Structures are given as structure tokens and as C-alpha cells.
Amino acid sequence: MKIINPQTLGEFIIEKQSEFQYSSGELSRLLSAIKLASKVVNQEVNKAGLVDIIGAMGNKNVQGEEQQKLDVFANEVFIAALNNREVVCGIASEENKDFIEVKAGKNANESKYVVLIDPLDGSSNIDVNVNVGTIFSIYRRVTSEGTPVELKDFLQPGNKQVAAGYVVYGSSTMIVYTTGYGVNGFTLDPALGVYYLSHPDIKIPEKGNIYSINEGNYIKFPLGIKKYIKYCQEEEGERPYTSRYIGSLVADFHRNMLKGGIYLYPSYSHAPKGKLRLLYECNPMAFLAEQAGGSASDGFTRILDLNPIELHQRSPFICGSKEMVIKVEEFMKNA
Ligand code: AHG
Ligand code: MN
Ligand code: MN
Ligand code: MN
Figure 1 (cartoon, rainbow, N blue to C red):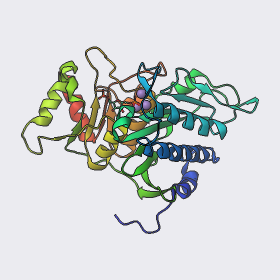
Figure 2: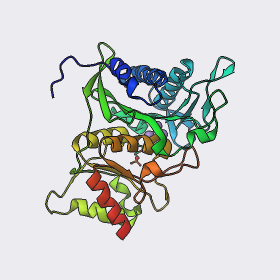
Figure 3: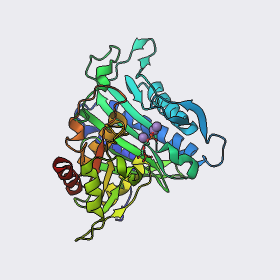
Figure 4: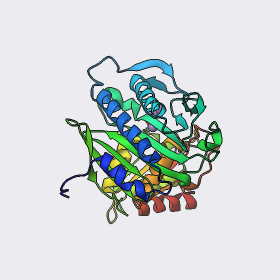
């Protein structure tokens, strides 16, 4: 598709502000803060092979994973961008045990939004020059404005998200987001430091022929998933499907959204909730998938209808082309 006079992300955010239910410019400022932070992280990701920021710091984060230096850096950059500009009243991050209350000066913050972020997704891929990303999810707080944020402001079902998106630091860096009116993608011109609208109104093909799963764990999967994998590999009609797994959710999701396909991170025998985090990974991706005409499920229930009970809760995650997700649910139900 040839786009004449491409719009910048900044112009787009302002233009779309009026579409937004609670339009006061607050959400626009918040998205602008994310845009800015993503450019800073992009610079550092691009240099990852050059500078001494690479490699494990030797710390473990709240998820029990070894934190990579860029994880820490990205976490700090996003938190600082959101904090300093006072565009949110609270932040929760995959990398922090507890949520952060953002205060404006000495007073309680007046902002009505909270943000949940996975500052660097796919961090195990940093050392090998493979795509990583950032995922964000935005809610309107449920407690009164001007009071300190509470845990319940963050523990909302995904269907209450007002915006969500991701940045993929790839061969090109892109930001893809939704405010509940479809999904749009913007590509960074690195020379100008400007994101341009490159993928307007993204739609996931209803059917696809790519399946993405860490098949090395096959033996640990539930029977329904094992059967679905076999189904993908059968020679019949459009099948066998193509297998593609990068190991960065953002990159795997992004490819499947553009080409059609399904991403699966199911439960394991020893991890009944799987690995991915409901609030930082599953919910924002599910919102994007649905806004693009796709679907997201934990195998039985719509992801966006799950009621979170803790910040770092995990969930099985099956997401992508609608018909493919329905098929997995059939296998799960009948297993
Ligand atoms: P993060 O780097 O934010 O901790 O997320 C890693 C996630 C996700 O990006 C990816 O899809 C998945 O872990 C890969 O897990 P496996 O290595 O178990 O397949
Ligand atoms: Mn992690
Ligand atoms: Mn992640
Ligand atoms: Mn992460």
C-alpha cells in the first residue's frame, strides 16, 4: 500500500483525541510519553551489541528470571517518562514487585490513568540480536481521582482497558496501538526520530497458516494442545501449517497479526497457568488482537474477561486469527 503524505504518530494522536470518550488530552499526553520512552529504548537496543550494557546483571526480578541490563534500563526509562510528566497516577511493571504510586509534587496525582508495562519483552533474545519489544496496557483508575492509587486500580479485567499497544524493536522499529477504535501501526524513521503511520487499520486475517509455540515443551502440554499441534502438522487442505517461533511474544504476535496465524503459550504440567503474565502481556495483546478482528483465549475463556487477583498473575495464552483460536478451544473442550 502506498501512503501519500504519511501522518506522524504525534499528529495521529492529536487527531484521534476527539474520538476518545474522556477526551481531555490526558491520554494523548500519556501516549506521547510512551512514544518518547520507546525512542530512548530503541537507541539503546540498537547499540546493544556495541556497548557494555549487554548481559545479565546477576539479579533476579520478581518473576525469578535473571534480569538483563536492558530490562533494567527499559524499565527505568519508561517509568521515568511516565513519572516525570505526571501523565499517570500509577505504574505497574513486570520488573517491579509492587506498583508505583506517582505523585505530582507533594500532592496526590490528579491523573485518572494507570499503566502496566512489560518494558522489555523477549529479553533472552538481546544477546543474539533478535527482536525484542515493549508492551503497555492503560486503564482508567477505579478509585477516586486525587487519592493514592490502590491495587484494585491495576487488577481490572482486560475488557476495561482504554488503550494498549506494543513497540517492536525490529529490522524497523514500530509502535502498534489501539484505543478501542481499531489498531494502527507506525514505523520509526531513525534518521528523523519520527514515527509515521505505516499500517493503518490493521486486520488479522480470519484464517492463517502459521502456528507459534515452543514445541520443545510438547511433552508437558495439555492433551488438547498436543492434539492441536498434530492437527497443524497433518497433510489436509491448507495444512500442514508453517511453524514460526521467535521467542519474543511481541515479534511472534506482530508477524501473526500481519500474516495470519496463532500464538500459543499453554499451561505446562508443572505450571498450570503457563508463563505469560496476564496484566503485562496477555491482556494488552488480547485487546489488540480483538481490535484487529482476531481472538484471544486461555483455552476456555476469553482473556479479556478474566478477573485478575494479583499483579504478576500468569495465564495460558492462545491468540491470533479467529478461526484458529476457535479450533484450539474445540480441541481443549473435547480433550
Ligand atoms: P520477558 O522477556 O518479558 O520475560 O517475556 C518472555 C516471554 C515472551 O516474550 C516469549 O514469548 C516467551 O517468554 C518465551 O518463552 P519460552 O522461552 O519459554 O518459549
Ligand atoms: Mn522477564
Ligand atoms: Mn514479556
Ligand atoms: Mn519483560
